[in-house]
Amino acid sequence: MADATFFDAPTEASLKKHRIVSKYFGGWANIVLPQTKAREGKLKYIDLFCGPGQYRDGTRSTPLLILDHVIKTPALRETIQLIFNDENTDFMAELAAHIAATSEVETLRYKPDLRNKSIDRGTIARMRQVDVPALIFADPWGYQGVSLDLIDAAISHWGSDFMFFFNYNRINMNLGSDSMNEPINEFFRVELAAELRTAIASLRPAQREEAILKAMRDAIKRLGAQVEKFTYRSKTGSRSTHHLMCVSKHRQGMALFKEISAKESTTFDDSVPSMEHDPSADPAQGSLFSPLEQLEADLLATYAGQIVTPEQVYHNHHNGRPYILKNYRQALLHLEETGAITVDPPRTARLRSESLPPDARIKFKAG
Figure 1 (cartoon, rainbow, N blue to C red):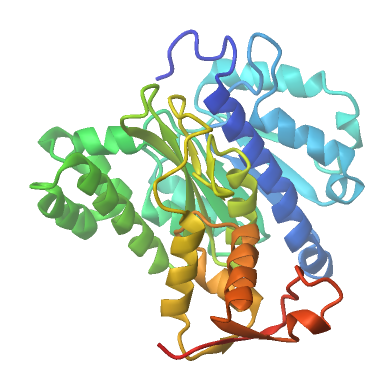
Figure 2 (cartoon, one colour; figure 1 turned 90 degrees about the vertical axis):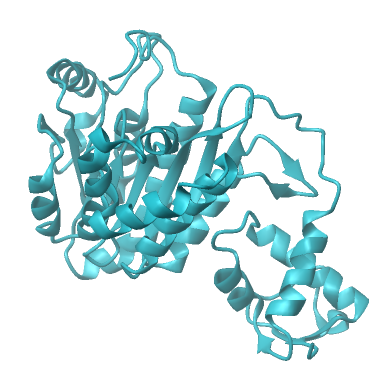
């Protein structure tokens, strides 16, 4: 459970979480709304562990930030159903009061649906019954209630995405504990959990985290989706504590999450975001080797002998890497300048030499 003072005032880490999730909601709605109007005519936002919606200092958290966005957006006022759930009855009473006090909440076509349920196996069956595009967010205090089966159910309808806080610190502590076998099995599924226990037994901490995250990423890929993450580190920066994960079956979802969360990075090295919140990091300190040079080398090796567009390069390469769209444009323009690639139309024929049309034809030299 949360510390008694958790909702007194938000930390910088919490503020970043609220901004990323609420901004992703707005972008996600813009992407799916046109098709939704022609099909189901309705969207849903579902928060499984919503909390009270506001800190005691008056700062609004994710549920009320999303409510505010919907109220300010006419198209969403007519199409979105907001569903807020938390098993804590006090939280739900507070949230209900905050919603009732929100200006113009009565303009919503669908009244916010407030629920007071535990997240369990029954939630998975109910999630599969959601018959409209939905963005589902899960931020549990630990990890119980969130599982691969829940993720699978949440993204089963077209246009539906799932965001969740992955408590790596808690998972890491309990993977080797017999008493925690059941919740760990629930999260990863029995076979994958057993494989993980064997795989990490002799690994160092950094290797163990990499193995756990890779297992999660591979399992989500088997669901037909992709996953991106934004990492939260401890006050000293010595270890990861949480990862904010975004799961989507569409490349636009992955790109949207990447661009939004990149802006919340503590540091940028040669304009490449760290994709981390690290309270101990020095924003002015860069790495020994330029990450843009590393990107250029990787692109030359990955696409050797191929003809592709900038759009294809970006969407097929960025997942699981820190680079954003701007970085790919920088790398490709520099490779063109050095003659490592050729671009059609060439630099001299483009209205602005530093521009790179998404449908341009890029030819990589054979390796």
